[in-house]
Image (cartoon, rainbow, N blue to C red):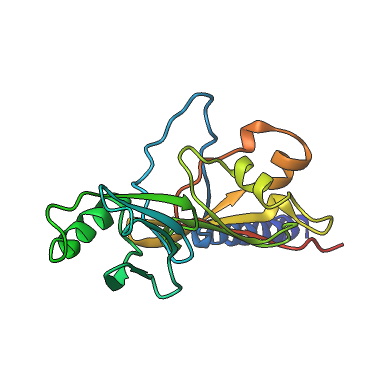
Length: 210
């Protein structure tokens, strides 16, 4: 009887081990490395997005210089030119295109484009959804970390399960999920839970279940 009981317990233990191994193999949620002090990440060149505000300066032609918002369709209208595509271009790229277009009207135009209000393209925004105080999209900036993002959205709500939060990121053309421990970072103050952000990241904060 005792031998049979031990055998049965052994089978149960083996089955439980198989279940754990399968679950671990099926899990697609990884953990990101923490941010090291003084670590610097290269930021991609800023690309103009819908709802950005830009100032266009045309040298020696003040009547053509203007400040305009980028329309939701990504285009702008400036003196002498209508419906110029601005979104998804760097300020330098847009300036060179405006020079080419204005060359029909004035001799050797010299244009400078300055972005004064930032929204960025969707690919350069970071989105925070779920149990944040102010869920929203925020523009990415160089060397941004998760702590910066959480400050921008006002932190966690009282109902947030911060340690079960997920960061969704495109890696090598594929969308992957990473575990981030916002409770440890925000509520417990452990800076080792901080992680570096990249343009296009999505942070999903679930609700806790009591």
